[in-house]
Image (cartoon, rainbow, N blue to C red):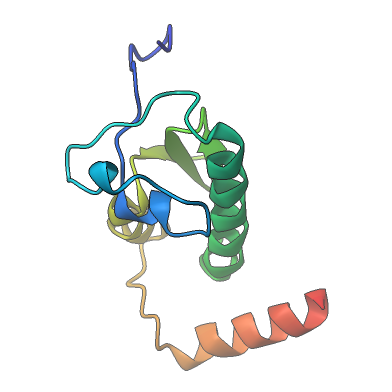
Length: 122
């Protein structure tokens, strides 16, 4: 249990089981829960990889996301404002509100930024 927020177990979002580690089919329900130690290392590795990829995209909008206790995310802007994000389904609406911009995945400027950024990191 987290002393600050009182959460016992994190909820299972569909993206939590999609990064290469085996997940139990019983956890696919919308209200499924996972225990704290079940595949913890693999989940943490996949979650941090997801955070890195999200930061590449969010950098275009001046935002940054970080993992918080392996249960939620913290989304921040360059001015120091931050908001807690429950899962990836919750991210994009809160990111648009924080950035005060509409986000379009097909924006040519975003695609050029991502293309340039991925070439620079290789």
